[in-house]
Amino acid sequence: MQTIPGRQNLKEIASAVFQAAVRAVAPETCVRRHLRLSENRLKAGETEYSLDQIDRLYLVGAGKASAAMARAVEEVLEDRITDGVILTKYGHAVELKHCKVIEAGHPVPDENGVRGTHALLDLVSNAGPEDLILCLVSGGGSALSPAPAEGIRLADKQKTTRLLLKCGATIHEINTLRKHLSQIKGGRLCTAANGARIVSLILSDVVGDDLDIIASGMTAPDPSRFEDCFDILSKYSLTGKIPDTVHEHLTTGRDGQTAETPKPEDSVFERVQNRIVGSLSDALAAAEAEARRKGYPPLLLSSMIQGEAKEVAKVLCGIAREVQRSGKPTPAPVCLLSGGETTVTVKGDGLGGRNMELALAAGISLAGTPGMLLLSAGTDGNDGPTDAAGAFADGSTISRAAASGRSASEYLARNDSYHFFEPLEDLFITGPTRTNVMDLQVLLVDG
Image (cartoon, rainbow, N blue to C red; front, side):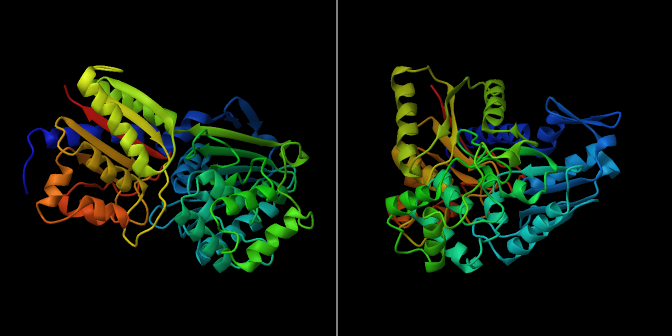
């Protein structure tokens, strides 16, 4: 394979910047920053709880990072935990002393998730006003905690989830539907807790850190309504495609025959504390520091990137080109940083994810341009249903692929970015990071 002078060095620098970002939001780091125990008093943020006045302490959680978060909590609380249930993605489990860990399907829920969610709800329903529930929430928690509303089968939720993922709906839109099809989401975990105190430690994976959207807000008030679900379905022309049971449930909710999710004024939240312990902002701050150490002064473009992945790529590359051409908005060398969560409207039958699709589109935009390299990757270590976190792209990406007879535009059209980058050895594979604060783009620009 052709060797590009300096290219490997840029890949190593981009990798180091990304890894520094991930280390900053490691679950253990985030939990210990916000949860401390001193003389039998548990401090969560600025709120203290006397464990002498707590009958039982339960530990529950859902998300890709929840098992690692639970391990950190166990280290803080030692033998004070009465019982616990943790739901996480396949391959993300860790050994725990006081909690049962259940691995389940993501991004499409499965039967393991249903069984695990009912075990979690059963545990929570044993609690009472003199008990404390620590709830650990992270990205992926929505898919990992399926408890379909009455009358809805798991297969119905699976089909609805696939339709929403394929059409390019945002996570805010997807989770609005999830909340209204669930027995646990949209604050309903609090309803099941019989007045127990609840402290949720939350690792944010959504743009804006909206509490009601992260893992579909199991312990947060839900401002959305059944009518919003129909607006989303109409927007993506899905109203006639969803299962009949889902349509019927949403209709009875819209008509007032099925109870809404608990709202901000509901008394069920009076003893609930929701606290974000880690977010993309923390990761980006660490990325900035590492880029500076590597000799690439950082410029943070945005921590709230959204939109179609291939269109976002064009904008990012346009900024990089301007930097190299005119030195604006900042001179090179520079590390342009951005993060958020893009979407992909799937039209082909290929294999990939939003980060690899963004990188492929960036390769097309950067074709023939020297001195630039982009890495786009998910902080959880997974991009779509693949073993890659994302991919690298630079000015040589398209020509190197063309040399072996592969057309970048054709691979992009069929959403097959994984198989485009694999023979180029430009997939970025980290393995599960057991954290999740959305996606990160590192774009290095030389002078």
